[in-house]
Amino acid sequence: MFDLKTRVLIVDDMMTMRKLVSKSCKEIGFTELAEATDGALAWQKITEEGNFGLVISDWNMPNCTGLDLLKRVRADGRFSKMPFVMLTAEAEQHQVVDAMKAQVTGYIIKPFTTEILKGKLGEAYKKVVGG
Amino acid sequence: MQLLQSEMCNSVGEVFRTQFSLEARTLGVTAATESAPGSCAVGVINLVGPSVAGSLILWMPKDSFCKFLNVIFSESHTDVSAANADAVAEFLNMSYGVARPKINQKGHSLQPAIPSVIWGSDVSVSLNAYEDKACLPFTCMDLPFNVLIGLKKAA
Image (cartoon, rainbow over all chains, first blue to last red; front, side, top):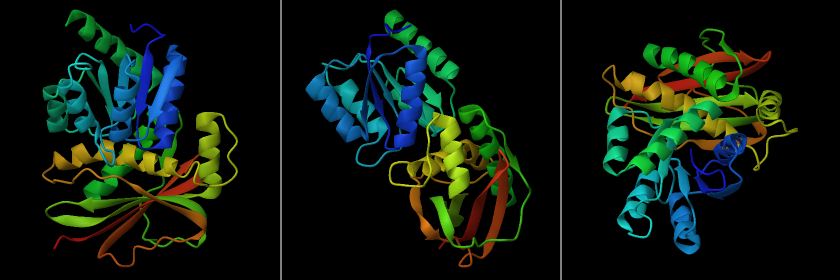
């Protein structure tokens, strides 16, 4: 599992979902949480602050989608290995495939529980360590 | 319409159960497609596909909405406001997200959508402009909320 001191960036345009994800992350034990309201602002935070060890992002957002954010992250050598988990209501197979092609680390479909999030983050960590 | 009704009945229940550990019970389908003006939070998704267009609406009276938030976040919400109204859109977003792949597996091509939010003290909802309409009343913790569906043939 990720070190619980890992700095986590939660990206979602819905405040309610940011609160839900943040609540679950705190229940898991993460203590360093930051938030962004769309992919563009998340990219700004990533490039300016640069010390995030995990991104948990929604897909369907205005300005810059989660998939676009993922592609930007993977295209930049500084962040290309950054664990990036998509947490989204987009559940169609072709969307999961698109995210996999863009090298997403993990994919979680809403609705979720803290246990589901913990399990998926564990799988993502193994993928990062193993890969 | 029947497929959409059926999948939304299932998906709303699944979202409340999984995400919030709450039981939302459907009360069937009614023909009532207008709400009386009142204080409420409303989430709206524009349904877009090659053969169909319409609206998917989640209507929550203030008391229901605030009670759900109080339970979900262990907070005290007494009114719908800019600070909490997007919750209704997220409830709808998740429900549509669960229902859409199941509908599309049966030959439709409903597109992803970003829900919008309406709230206020004197808001009413009407589906009178739609050719095909239905209301799915739900109850959760003995408090009501409705899913409304309005469809018209795509241009």
